[in-house]
Length: 72
Image (cartoon, rainbow, N blue to C red; front, side, top):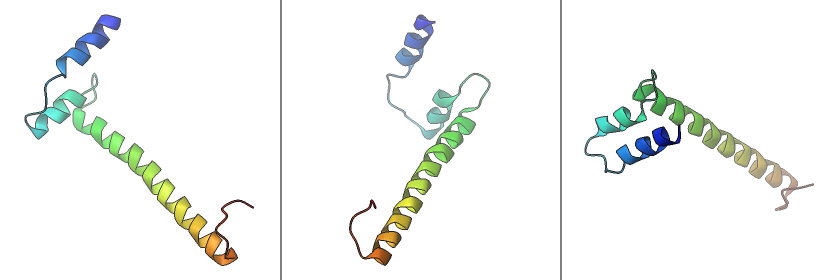
């Protein structure tokens, strides 16, 4: 198993020359590279959205209480 990991890392030591290579390298077994990249964007995008929404809610709450302290 460890040789498979090292072989995979060794194949990706060159820079991308085209955007299509991104999807070729992102392919995981039967999952297409486009699907894998899309899943990554959705996953990280959902955490960014969650962080922005909770930050806005926290700012709104602090304004109503007229306090810069986030706790209490």
